Structure formats: C-alpha cells, structure tokens
Length: 289
Length: 287
Image 1 (tube, each protein chain N blue to C red):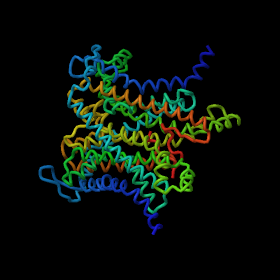
Image 2 (cartoon, chains in turn red, yellow):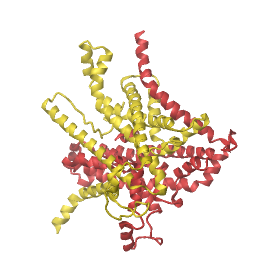
Image 3 (cartoon, rainbow over the protein chains, first blue to last red):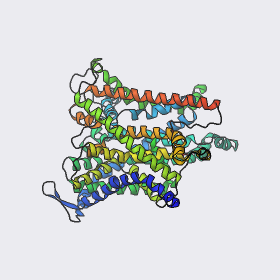
C-alpha cells in the first residue's frame, strides 16, 4: 500500500502544473493548428476543410516580413553579443566590489515596463532630439533626415530590449571559471590572448549559446519595437500576426503564420544547437534572472 | 605617451563595460527626466521645461490608476498560484524518479522557447472556439501558464544544491514527513521560492503581448500604455514608471543588504552554508 502511495507522490505534485500546461498550452496549440486549416470569415463563421492554401497564401503574401524578422533578430543578436561579452567579462573579472551594483544595473531595465523603455527610445531618437542633430551635423543621416522609422531604429530597439538576456548567461558562465585554469595556461607560456581564446572563451561557450537563444527567440516574434520605432516598411511577422488576429480577424491566416513562425524558430534552434554543441540545452536555466 | 597607451590597453575592457552600462541606463534616465517635463502638446517627446505638476497628483488619470491596480491584482493572484504549482513541480522533478520525467521536463521548457505572439494567438484560438469571452479570467489563466515554467526553473536550481542530511536528521529526531517539510525543507527552500515569486510577479506585471491577445476589454497597465501611445502618453505614466522603478530598486538593495548581513552571520558560524538569494548564476547543475 505505502509503496504504491509513494510511487504516486510525484504525480500528485506534478499534477496541477501539468494539467495547467496541457490545458492552456498544448490544447491551445492543437486548436490553433485546427484553425489554420479552416476557411471562412468572422461573419460567415469558420469551417474545418483542411484548407492548406492558408499556409501557402499567407506565406507568399508575407514572405518579406518573415525574412525581415529573422534578419533583424539575427543582427540584433550579434550586436547584443558584441556589447554583452566584454561587459559580462568586466563584471566577472574586473568589477571587484562593484559586482553586485553592476549586476543590478544590468537588470535595472527590467524594473521599468517594456513598453515604456521602448517609448523612451522613441523620445531619444525623435526627429528633434540631440542624437538626430548630432548625426545630421556629422552627415551620417540619409535623405529624409530621420532615425525613427528606419531598420536601424528597430534593430537598435531589439538589441537594447533583449541585452540583459545576453549579459546574464554569459556572466554566469564566466563567473564559474576557475581562474587557476587561466593561470595554468599562462604558466605554460600562453599569451593573454591565447589564454583567452583557448581557455576562457571555450568555457564560456554555453553562456554564449544560451544568451543568443534567449535574445534571438523573443526578438524574432517581437512586434513592439517595429510598432513604436518603425513604420509599415519595418513591419515584422509579429506585427502581421497581431493585426491579422486582432484587427482584420483573419484567424486562419494568422494561425497558419504563427505555426510557420514556430516551426522556423524550432528549425533554427535545432540547427544552431547542432552547430554550437549540446551544452546549449542548459540555456533555459539562465532566463530566470 | 607609452604609459598612456598601456593604461588605455589595461583599462579598455573596463571603459567598454562602463559605456555599455551607461547605454543600458540611458532610457531609464530619460523616463525619469521626462516625468518632470511640461509638454506643450499631447506628446511627451520634447523637453519643454521643468514642472512638478505631474508629481503632485500622479493618480489623477483614473483610467491609468485603474489599469495599474488591475495589473497589481492580476500579478499578485497569478504569482500566488503559479509559485505554488511550480514549486510542487520542481520538488517532484528533483526528488523523485518516475515514468514521464523527461516528457514533463520538455513540457516545462517548451513554453519558454515559444515566442509570446504564438502563445497569445494559440490561447485566443482556443477561447474563440470554446466561445469564452476574454477578460480578467483569461488573463489570469494565461499569466499563470507562462509563469509556471520560470518558477520551476528557479526553484529547481535551489533544490539541486540542497543538503538532504538536514531532512534526514529531522526524521531521525522523530519528525514525520509533513513536519520535516514544514520546519526544515520549506524554510531552506524559501529564498528560491521568493526569487521565483518575484520573477513571476515581474513577468506578469510587464506582460503585454500575451495579454493583448487575451484581454478583451480589460485594460492592464501595459495595455493602457499601448492604447495611449497612439494618442499621446500622459506624463503621469512616466511618474508612475519612475515610482515603480524606485520601489523595485529599493527592494533589490534591501535584499542584497540582507544577504550581506546573512553572509556575515554565516562567517561567524562557519558550519552554516548560505547561498545568495539574488541567485544570478544559473544551473549549479541539472537533474
């Protein structure tokens, strides 16, 4: 009797959570899949007809937005890595007693609402702002003399908003490095540069993989940055899904687009992990900070 | 000249890091500064002059205040439920071997790897097909759903570094399973649970995308801001954002201070081990 009871304990503990995730994550995915194969309109109602043309039609109509989303998110991820790695390195090895304060500064943007942070960039990049003036004086601006509503402003917004997701996992992986390993490399006549490339960087690789995934995945699906900092010409796939669902009520097309987006992201992640090594699966742990 | 060059090379990474930190903090400074602005028109984009007017009565706009109150209620409620559910799941995953463990792990990880727009759209698809009209209830369901995974991950990492001999000691001294859990396990787990709850609260109060799909006519704080961004954001939004920021930073500093104090006390009694509450280093190991 007690043996059976003991065996059932984990299921009782997991039960509520698993039921919640199945009812409100797995089942909705099924319904979205179903919806993506229906035809009809909001007024006439929708019928399930294995309407595969929803996929082909919406893909050919919105292929630019798909390509643009992956392109913008890719550039933003690379930029975030370039900014984040030296910063994380500095916090891990050079910050001394400032370490906690600097970590607090890294997560400080999370203490202001996402939308308000993005609106702050709207203020900063505004046509009459200091930055636009400076760029104009330096002759760096294009013909219309604007920074907002350009690919640059949207990518800058994406880079900024997901930067902490890049810094924290890289910091965590650097922090765990046993500094005697680096000393050992130097004792064995490695130069500082060689020690970095052959010891520090490989050990911090899982952090880089985690950080790039945590930056790239939300960035591809984002539509706030394109909405606040861009125009119609910078619309990403998130903007399309949002407006198809909530504005034009074209549910089947929006559901099909959501599915394709998820499939493409999964494919990208699988390829990336194959390429970058399986430690990448540690990634999800890092997002909690 | 060579000395200066050497100094620069040595300090290059520190200078870069300080610049990067400045970049991260600039928008926050802008939010705070513009809460004192006295804009000429509806749009609070251009600095016109200093005023304390909007600080004197930050809750003057009832729609904004209502949205804020609703967001806090929603976050509190979904935090309590998701933290309770998630903590139990973490215990099951770390402490028990059972059939379906890998599948459960997968189910917990996959929502974190799904773009929010897809989660929001999928939930709305289901609510539409069932004819559920979106509102506070659907928001609550959605917020608990996306918080659970994060709670599990945080609590689990605390559990993995857990010294089980303490529990065995309690049981040797005659405590039953429930008493052991209440008097030993739970207090030791508390920092992890608190960290998880804080994260769940932060995720909920800041969520826009999933809420946008499943709110119906209910307006949360981020949804209010999105609506207002089309017609011009009132300065009061900056005031409330600044207040929120100040409160959170104060809470964080308090946590760090407490942690320092606890560390000092632990140094006095070296046999007691304490882990940082502000646990930023992920995965001290994985089950």
